[in-house]
Every structure is written in structure tokens, then in C-alpha cells.
Image (cartoon, rainbow, N blue to C red; front, side, top):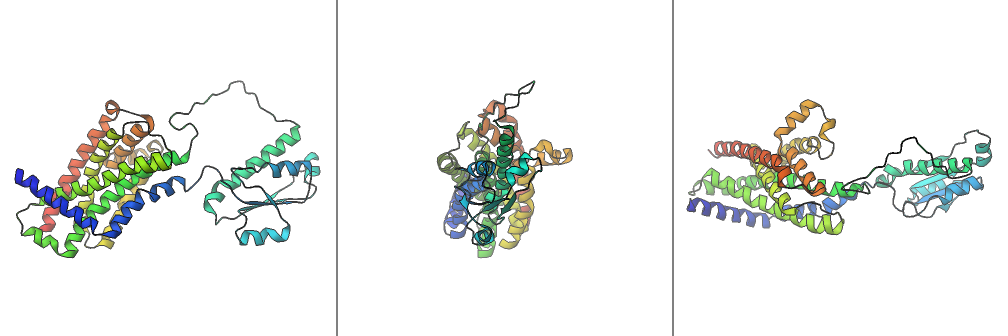
Length: 372
């Protein structure tokens, strides 16, 4: 037993050295757990932020002035008065993300009940702003027009008033959810890629033949790749939570990081085994990439990280219970968002241990056949 553990340790250290000498994979790890998390969390804002807008006010009335003055920081930069000739040229030159044309006699038509139209042009190449900006502008215009016609700021009174208290994310910031969800996705993706690439790298460099003539078993070879690559991803995710999620993005973590790391370790036990299995099926890095794309996207979409599982067909829900990502997403969100303890998430921990053992046994059997 001591010799077997020594072989697993030495082979794992060899894998770490091989990874250190592969700058592409090292760069991928650094990017995935830093800029990858940040860009994914902040890529689609909840509202426009310092968006540029040009306004053609052909009415110069009280109603049009109210609309123009309603565009304020931090959502919009101060509106710039332009003319018709500058509308298209300004958008072509990327000077404005939005241009608004208020027609003449706008206030007179409003008071007469003629329902006048306002032209809004949107630069759709500015995806992050255009995605939410058009709807935000429409809300601003509707609110200002309604208040102008009512002559006061109207507050509707309902027979029953719902008082909503939002837990875990009081301001409903998408970046809070996106950052944690991206950490989960990166853990799954990197663990599969690193272990699969480690096995293919052995085959491409010819070192797999050296291992076959050494007094080591398939179990020792696979265990070394699992613990070494799993350790790299585990450490990277811990640093990402501390310095990127909590530090850079200012997302408060509610629960125990240690408990989350324990669940992540069980999840890595399953996903690294999947990577080994893919490494035995693929014969080159491009084939491995195609296999990962085919499997990783359904795992991320159907596991509940992007869309609640309750909104999926029941058959899909039952099938995805066999995937480790489903239980890991539930565990991670319960711990990091709601501060759940081990007494609550133990079913997910048990499921990850069982699924990981099944994937490990299946990958080990496939590895033994491929080495023969």
C-alpha cells in the first residue's frame, strides 16, 4: 500500500510539472478564473451604464424638455443636442449609442390626444448597452409623458399592497449571481480539459509507453492525474472566490468556503474522471475539444445554473440527476447564496460521492482497455 501511494504521489507531481511546462494551459487557467469570471459576470448589465445619447428636440416644449432632462447619470451621459444631419453620421462614427428625435408639435399633439411618435435609433453593435437601453428609454419616456399629462407625479393605490423583501441579493444584481455561477462552470470545464489533455499529452509525447513498462498500474496512473489536476482547479477556484468574486466584484459570500471546497472536491472527483474517459476516446487535442463541447454545453445549460430546473421538462430533470453538475450547482448555490450548512447539503454531497465513484470506475475500465 505504501508503494502504491508513493507511485500515485510521484506520478501526480510529474503531471504538475508537465502542466507547468505547458504555457497555453497555464494561461487558460489564469484567464478562466480571473478575467473569464469578471467578464461573464459583468458582460450583460442590468441597466445601461453611462450610455451616450444624442437628442433632436424639434419641439422645444415643456414636455420635450422633461424627457431630455430625464436622461441622467449613471445610466446615461448628459444628452447632446444634435441635428438631423448628425444623427446617422454620429451613430456611424460610434459617437452615440442612442439617438432620439422628438418631432415638432409634440406637446400640442399630446394635449390633443393624437398619440404622437418619437423616433429612437439604437446602435445594436454596442450589445451590452443596446440589450437593455431601448427598454429603459421607453420606460423613461412613458413615465415623463404620463406625469406631464396628469400634471403631478401619480402614485396608484391598490386594495392590497405586496411588500417584497429580497434575500441573498437585495438589489437583484446580476453580477452577484453570474460571478458565482461562472466559478461553478469554470470548475467543471477546466477539470475535464486538464485531465483529458494530460492523458492525450502522454500519448502524443510517447511517454505513455514509458509508463507501461514501469511497475505502475492503471489505477495509479489515473489516480495521479485525478488528484493533481483536481488540486490545481481546486486551488484556482479558492483564489478566484477570494480575490475575484469577493475582492474585485464585491460579492458577499454567505456560507462556509471550506464546505464549498469539500463539495467542489467531490465534484472534481467526478469531472476529472470524465476527462480521463474523454482522453481515452479522443486521439488528439482537437478531438478532445469537440467531445468536451458536445458534453459541456448541455451540462451547463441543463444543470440549473442558467435556467431553473423546475422550468425544464420532467424527463430532462430526471435524466440530469445522473450528472454531477446538477448536484454541484444546488450545493454551491445553497452554500454561497443562502449560507447552508452540512445538515442541509448532505444529500448533494452523497450524490456527488456516488456519481464520482461510478464515473471513476467506468473511466478506469476504459483506461485499462486503451492501454492494452
